[in-house]
Image (cartoon, rainbow, N blue to C red; front, side):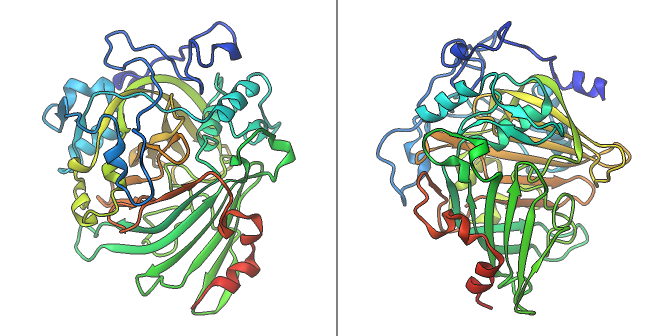
Length: 452
């Protein structure tokens, strides 16, 4: 593994300061803990807040308000020249370039701008020396929220919690989305499931709160399927906790009943996707981290999906963006950024279909940008990539849309984005919707609102 890390340019941990200094946030560092300065050759620029022009409103194309929308690609990486750029790519990206003919990396000028509102910045400063991981070694025990718990991370689990707790408002509503799974190599049809989904982050309300005074919840979520026929009418509510395993309740229309699903977590296959999509794969990593030991490997300069508004365009033909041979490069945008690299190794005595995983986390937004899963034989198996955009509603960046590639089956999966869905995503900063209230997420309410 060490030789692989060296080959793809992963560096050792690089502390910016000799000691944790909250005053450095917004000075030597970005307000959320990234290195403010450019890299040595300037290919990663200095950080500067503000990427959106004013005037955006719901219904208007988000990309039209990006200050750098007229940027052109600097170059494109494909299988023929991948070796030239290998030290700025992950092992997974190199494998995708070899195995998926539509997969290309169109590299644009890097635009570093991700930040958060003032109250999030102040809470992040308050967390320096105060936020704590629980005595179990994995739960988030103390933090001031909304804010980054560990802007000076010293462990892999701290980096992961930074990613999980990055500010995205109080909720995200996906009024229409398509989960797309490409056909088997032997032939057949796409699996395309149309649904809607909402995430509610109870700790994301404006202001400053101690995590201990709030429900010990990372998020609540609800989704329901509209198609295909085999899934239509099925619905789910789930609660992901900060300090224990999740609770899931599922409505099955054929039975007209709600069932508690205690095993619908971790590496359990999601209903309807031919064992290609586990419960802990959405948004690069989802759910409880307690089955793994988390290691902080270091930092890396890497081409990642950034300012990629094409992956959130609700008005395109989704089949022309998500193809069996990979994502069409015209819909993506990659930039060179610094990322934290963390590794997850399954704990002794615990099982998981992917006993080794590696994750890449953007230093500016703390977004989970990519992941690699290895099978029980240590062979690279699955690769995930997400796509960051600045969000006008929240004043921060988010990355719900992601694509997963299975190197064994050759299948491509897309979820959590609005590409080709006909409706845009909606981020909320006030809990002004019934789905942004705790009492929505009960089995009785799931039964009451389910229609079939």
